[in-house]
Length: 370
Image (cartoon, rainbow, N blue to C red; front, side, top):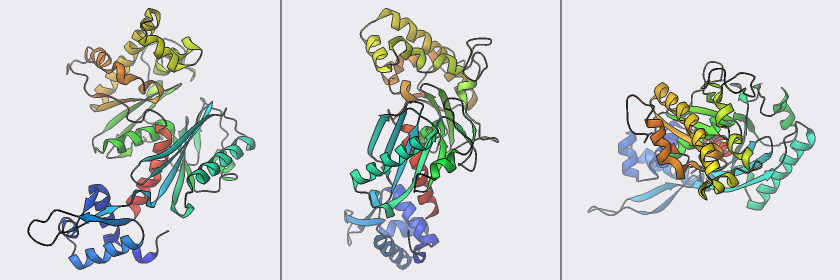
């Protein structure tokens, strides 16, 4: 933790500028933030003393003395992300620059039991030991789940993909000796993609995994809705009276565009489906064309609602880059206002986006509150 002497407005503002600009000089900071040079120098010394920034050379001279370059130190702090699914457990470690230091994914069937959470603790501790992490630099642990998480980020209000008890936070807390919060998996993944884009424009993220979810990011923050149930795109109806969804309703997007609609053809192995598809299997081609038709309908609806970029993520999203041109064409044919599908993007994080986003919460919180 930082000493109280560091907790000044100028201290935080100067750090945030260096963080956002990647590198800055005393003069640039003074001019942009309207802070006197002596005050800037004092705070730069404090930031250097705290281990948050360092000097990294000098800018090219414009005739006078060369100005020192100040940069933030990415590994000054870390955050851990955990993604819990029905059949897998993922752990990621990121630094202040959102660099993925390492990740680990293992098959681990979810059970709301002491034995399961004890295994989570063991895996996390092994992960820290492998990377010799200074625990004083750990900001916190974000845990993403396929569930609706309330505003307090400790309470689950709805979960059917995995069966979770109402006291899961306390259950985990009895095993995990680190500060942590719970996050909806799609919101976490959307946050990670938004941060990666370094854009303040709205972004819709569509999570296409064994369940379908999504998020809407506004000004770098997740729009949660009044009841924290915003962007449940998987449960919007695209085929009235259509297939039954796991939620009990009929015609939901999830029933048509979950990854299982493809992976079920190859014994649950999605990679094998796309291998067959790329090899020219005509039957799999017909299945995938139908899948993209339903997906294009949903994506066009999202474009009509939000008029912003739509990012295809999740396990399906990680394969869509190879089919993006033809998918954009399908979506464009449904759009009465524009004939280009350039607003549709494939995800940056091909794996572990939800875990990265859950961890990124702590990075963002640290930077905003400094």
